[in-house]
Length: 68
Image 1 (cartoon, helix red, strand yellow):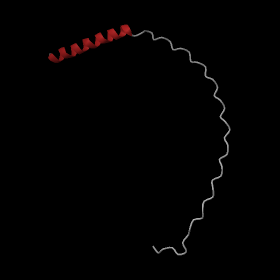
Image 2 (cartoon, rainbow, N blue to C red; image 1 turned 120 degrees about the vertical axis):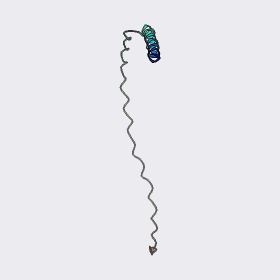
Image 3 (spheres, rainbow, N blue to C red; image 1 turned 180 degrees about the vertical axis):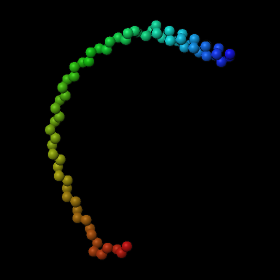
Image 4 (cartoon, one colour; image 1 turned 180 degrees about the horizontal axis):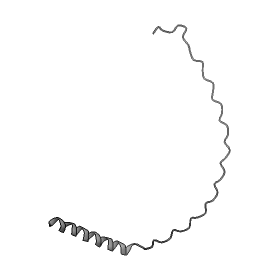
């Protein structure tokens, strides 16, 4: 019995909120404005080749490798 009263109060409050919010919502929703035409993008600038990196120094190799 108490449970039914509690749920009835929630149901009534929910219906009241739904009725109030329905009054303030524009129905039907306003139409969206037409999209603005996009300007064509500028062509990318030509890429310049990167300069060659300096040569690496020779890797020192020991004459005798340590025994593992």
